[in-house]
Image (cartoon, rainbow, N blue to C red; front, side, top):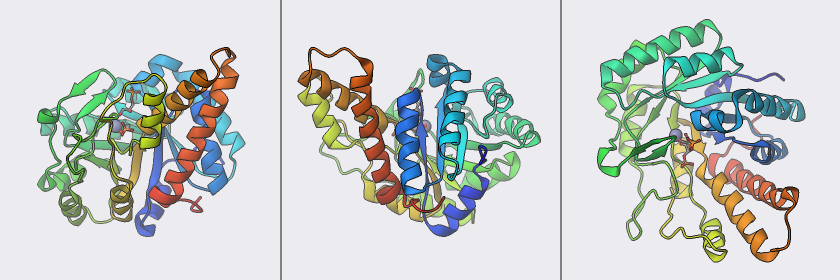
Length: 312
Ligand code: G3H
Ligand code: 13P
Ligand code: ZN
């Protein structure tokens, strides 16, 4: 089947009490690892591309890699999504260039300005059959070249969501409930806890509306340890506990964004390979186990965390 939008995926995920995995792609091995996992467990999928990914790999290469995955996985629905679109022009370029979904992230702007920018993107996207994710609230961590400190981050204010969605016409909404981007989400020694009270309040005010969670890597300690045991230095890397993501997926959260876990799986595996094989220099030899590690990790997420296996 051709690339799809997220509309049907989200409807089914909402009523089915599961979430769709949205995984960031930057190169061929990452695309292959993710899509082979989804194909094996028959899961719908969102492949997403950031501004940084477009700068690194080039828009056309990424679209063509995703189109190749669509050909290789004819039985699973796949959406191609722009992650953290910074402005109208970037969203337009992706809409014109074959994406089926875009995010406009004007969450750092004042409320009214966020509404105006989002509305403009929604008008253009809907005219072209593309859906739009918007964001209210600010996550801590690094996105592209923007670093938001924990002090400057803020939870979504539930009293704002209804007006925002009504005025913008967006198709899904990313909210801030304590997740953050990157591999250092919580201070070591503290208990990671998402604000389910905020999610519940949002859910009440926006019945049947798909909610998105960014910053949802769980930072598997096996990969952190693999990195640290093989020349890396990532002390105190901590993610979102998987049982809390599972709970969010059973609620209004229909899309869960995962990027850092892919990076950790790839980096850990490559570091271990070089430590064990200092004489090797063929990229296929070290990228092959990295791709397999991504595949296994994604399979685990699809089945045990998102609950979307068998839902394609
Ligand atoms: O939320 C950000 C994603 O992890 C993408 O990261 O901007 O480094 O590609 P990136
Ligand atoms: P992580 O850094 O937790 O993987 O978050 C990814 C993300 O939100 C992409 O938009
Ligand atoms: Zn994000």
